[in-house]
Length: 292
Image 1 (cartoon, rainbow, N blue to C red):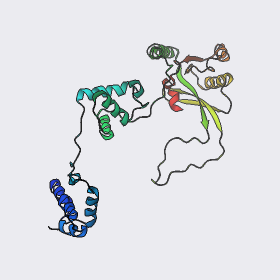
Image 2: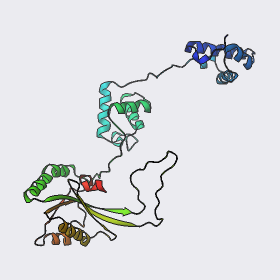
Image 3: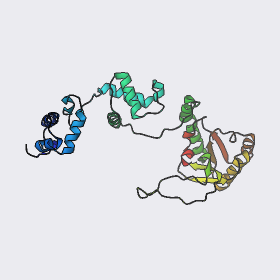
């Protein structure tokens, strides 16, 4: 036999070559002689012999080539799975997961339709369905969906209409904590050299109150004191001095925002600040949260 690479042969011929070579070694031929006769390396003969061991030569059967042909989901079943993972988290569908992963989606498909798919096939389906991995948003279960809907469809349109009538500016207000060792964003760097931020080893924190308009105009105040009613009043007083128009300030239902001292200050004659409140447990409705 000519010394030809076995991998260049058709799969059936490769199988026959492997069988004959291993059988020759079993019949007493040395691995070196079998390699010379069958046109492969001695190491290849050794791999074949080790794979067979005392088993049948059937273990050398040729494996299917190319992309594996597996089970697929009918279009209707695929649509139902896509709807299910878009509407509910895994635990609500009695799956042992809290967030959707390819494994979780595969388990759901197997549970409903008895079709077992690889994670790569599940990933391909997810891409076809337009579903991508995303960072989940935290949302409190105490939030009242009806109150949120009412605020979006009824209360906020009223606030906007009143602001237009009074020639006021709508501001969204919020508070946040800051730390000296907090780094956000990304930086370009070599693959094996992580960028370094030089900073002090001493850690300290502070707080910030901010208010932002629908057009992105921002006012903020930094402080190192605990957030209390007098701090919030001081911020509104400064905002009132800097903004010449009436101010419609929308905030969450933090106790400080609803404190008696705050209400008393707002009721003082000549105040140009009017306060409105968001629905409870829905900070994501506040654009100022995205600033934070």
